[in-house]
Length: 375
Image (cartoon, rainbow, N blue to C red):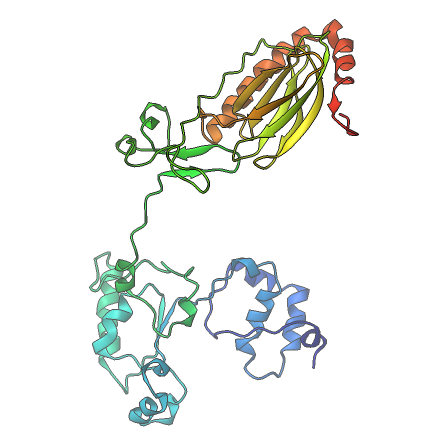
């Protein structure tokens, strides 16, 4: 066999397929022409050449395993040999059922572009009925029966396993989609409809859905009951805050009580925010050597401020628990707000740096991980 066929898998499929212009251009590339040479003088190459080239190309991830063709095989209606015997001609043996006038309405209503098999020797009225139906479509009129949207369900993973393509009946029987009342993201933000969402400007919920019966922002989830107390509002960061130098050393032990990742940062002596560490999971912990009067900030990964903590207690070893709070923003809104606040803080910090820069680095060198880690 050809070298390519010995080292690469061969794929088979239908002789009917729809090709994109990008794929057709790739067929003329040297790598594709090697496959053409490999399939020369092979049995039924049109059922494997194009399929194999596609599966070994960058187009593999965009394939749909359906060719938009209506077809009905006799295998799904009992013994196919009995059907072929009734037709009385050898040319039909091994092929699909021949369309007839009585079942044509289901074919015309299907969401596909092609149909087979048609033979005037079996039913001469099929083409005449099709001509009448297609003439109305070409004239811009509503044909009867109405055709389902072309290719409305090619993503159905079981579509290629069916012998008979679905028509309008399958569209109407599709289960009604449920309305999602709330989406929780990994960064701790959420988008949802609850009793207070009507007060949010530019929210994602219609006001008619902003009722406690539709959704609660603290609805029951795994490990958290609906009876839990609602978290307090998240604090607002004061842009003029900054850490004070000269405080006594102490140790801060942090523990994440939130159900999402949290990011720790510290304000330097100019008010600039410096990232320190991210606690990825609930109950994750870390410890820092710090000083009195140093301001620590805790944010969700969307930028929402969750906690502002000023270190106090010279020589102490204190525990700081990071609890969840009720976000004022959700998703992209929080990112925009955080970016705006960061820009304002950075502009103010630039004015205040100057002579305090050496003090800043002196202070940073005294902060580090408790243990053998350092910043």
